[in-house]
Each structure stands twice: as C-alpha cells, then as structure tokens.
Image 1 (cartoon, each protein chain N blue to C red):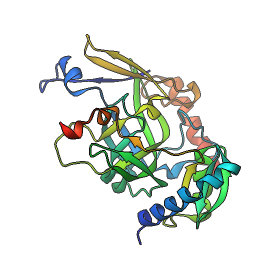
Image 2 (cartoon, rainbow over the protein chains, first blue to last red):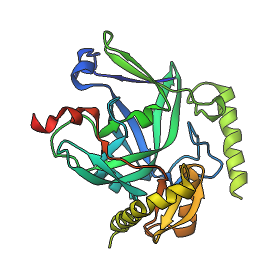
Image 3 (cartoon, each protein chain N blue to C red):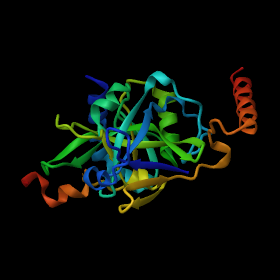
Image 4 (cartoon, each protein chain N blue to C red):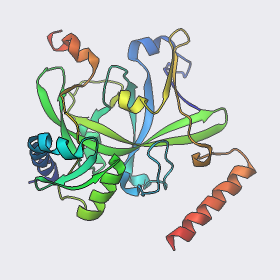
Length: 196
Length: 85
C-alpha cells in the first residue's frame, strides 16, 4: 500500500514538474503518544484511535539527506507535547543548537485502489524554530522515519510513492465490504470488553 | 521553570553522566531524572511508558539511548554551506 506524493495545478490536474521543483511532500497526521499501551508493536502499530482533538495534519518533505525527522517546534507545542530530551542539531548557521526531541504518534494514510489504511508509528521528531519564510511543508521526513518504509521516486512520471506494508491484522480498512465491517465490529466489541 | 527548561537541564546532566553510563547501560534506553538513571529498557517505548507512569507530565525526565552522542546536521544540504549562499 502506498502514500502518493505528487503536485497538482489549481484545477486539479497532475503537475509532474512540481516534484522536481518542490520535492515529494507527504501528508501525515501527528498526535500525542498518550494512547500507547504496552502491547502495541513498535512498527506499524495500530493502537486505539487517538483523540481527534489532539492531532494535527502536516505536510512533510521527504528528505533522504536528513538523518532525523524534524518539525516546526510550534507544531509540537500546539499538541501540548513535552520534550523527552534535547539534541544538538546543526542548521544553516552551522552553530550547534540544543533542540527538543518529541515522541509522537505518526499516522501515514496509505491506499491501494479502494482499500485505505493508516500506517501508524511511534516516532521521534526534533523540534526546530524555523524562519518565517513561506514554504510548502512543516517539516522533514528523515531517514529515521524512512527506515520503516520503502520509497519509489518516479521523476519522469512526476510522483513519489511511500510504500508501507502494515501487518494484515493491524490494518484499518474503509469501505471494503462486509467482511471488514464484521471484523471492525468484532474489534470494537473486544475493545469495549477490555475497557470494562 | 518550564518543563522544557527542566528537560534541558536534565539533558545536560545526562551528557555529563554519559561516559559513566556507557560502562553499564550501553545500548539501553534509560529514564534519567535528578542526575541518575531511574530505569533501563530495551526499547524507547518501554522507557516512555515507564516514565509516564512513574513521573507523569511536567516532571522533566529525560529518555535517551545510552550511546555516544554527536551533533546532527538538520539535512545534508547544510553541509554544503547554504548559510553562505
């Protein structure tokens, strides 16, 4: 299953050159990791649905030159996150700067035809103060994030796919038939039982 | 003092303690608070869950992998000296 990064013109038509001009940008959903439980897996986990009010959708540039995933510090703060430590980062000033590291739940929408799922990770992100210049993304998806996924960059065709393989039993399917609806109902009932 | 300030201070204590910690905890994720290791874990999530349960929000603990640290360029582009562009 994949998350396609591509550019479109205002009328919605595909703009292949946008990939070379702006780069591959993914739409990801960030949320607090409060809902984590000890039984969740560390990769491709599918924990309980996070509180909708405590999540934010952001645009992240896929950057294979970035060791770590970084986001605008204001976004992490808007989620009410507390840093788990500080790390020294070197930015354009070339002066090392202590930056807060946050632990977040990152959800990447994946699709395969009509089948859709959210691939969810717990990931570290470094919060950085960014200059107030206009740019089409809120952060960089670095190699730490990409270590969970495959990247298929199609320069000629003008798109880049982020490919994930969530375990079958951990997928969220939407609109894919009665079997999935029954499965979701069973999962909901099991969660209710666990809560009581 | 804000939580972020507390975490920064604790991070500085962690860096000072790191050479000693490497002897015992190398490769482990630790919860570090008040200048000492509170618990050691095989993964980050275990450390996070332990710290959340034990200390709760606003207490200013550090969760870190015990390994040699280094400064990280935000992206490879900065190594090309974009600051001089």
